[in-house]
Length: 500
Ligand code: BES
Ligand code: ZN
Ligand code: ZN
Image (cartoon, rainbow, N blue to C red):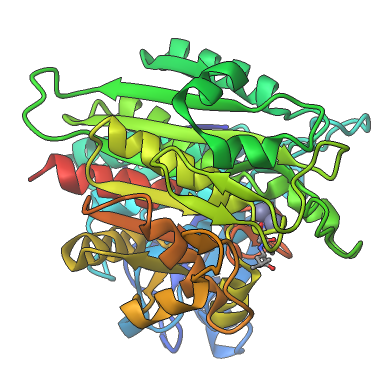
């Protein structure tokens, strides 16, 4: 789908459908909707009076125009109550509307900048939100289906009322496209089955991403991991027939290196069977998505490069399967991480923290700061926060606050979780420096405390996206499947750090 911007009066735009909007509770249309209503001889007003169009959030009404305006159809979308209007609703509204119009087989669509004139939102931000909502909402993972694909919307035009808005709208559009395409890249990686997306294939894709965006790509193999002392990562990998890869991508937007390099680390378990602590059979297929954190950091650095942000970023993805092969980790085994700390294995299903331990040590060794890791780490976090919020844990309140703000701007919610040192007791081992599980109670926090052992004093935030990484059904701009959670948050964080 191509998205462009133009200036004019939407009631005069030729298209298969134009999209205007209405606030809930409005007795009469205002702004562009009023102009279109006038051209339709008050049809929208009549339907409001008949309570058929209510402006309720995400309501989509499609009207045929029978030649009264150049467009074949007018679509009225509900923005919900005016007081509650936020950018994320704009993402959702455009996604809902476009899905309806695409199902009708339409190709060319134009939209106003919802919420920009009456709602008080900034045209640049609205344009970004529309581009994001459109590209994210129409995303489909259909590459393996041999059925003839349904026709897709080809063109979306954003219609700004005045010339002065055109420049900010174009800027917002460009940024929105980059953000959404990156999120969709992460979704593709998450949705890709584990027999295709092996660690080796992922490394090849990282090399291609690097080439396309001027990044540096370095892939460490098993032997190099061994030389660096990455015993925790190697321990997880040893039960699988697929060789592990540590995938490093580097973006240099601040050649003089005035600031330290932002480090993004993502869990890259391309399939988590649980290992010998085998997972139950229900929903094990979802564990092809246990690399969503790795997908997020990789997609984010691509977007950061496309946005040419003035900072340096390095991403690290420890990529491996977690399988119960003949050489697999056994319960009671003790592993030594790259920083020399020893770990007693009491569940081979708590593998994410093991691969992250060595990746965080490596990030620390490279001097990256601040550090953010993203991981589908614990079922406990999903139980605590459900599918809406992801957990944010860390050792630096300023960084946590910055991340939460970056998340809200992206429409991704993170909730700060406690890191009281008393939780550390729960992962004490009798025979090693720590054990890799701390029991069911507080499971997301003990996992975070485990990771804290590998970052030293570096400002660090850990994001546990286990509950929010998948969308169980089509919901506004998140179609069923991988969400690409955290991609846009990480890009916003990089923008915020670059602006310091
Ligand atoms: N990959 C899982 C966590 C997960 C669960 C992600 C559900 C997405 C949805 C992780 O490796 C895991 O198995 N964690 C265990 C930890 C436990 C053994 C301490 C868990 O949460 O049960
Ligand atoms: Zn696991
Ligand atoms: Zn896992």
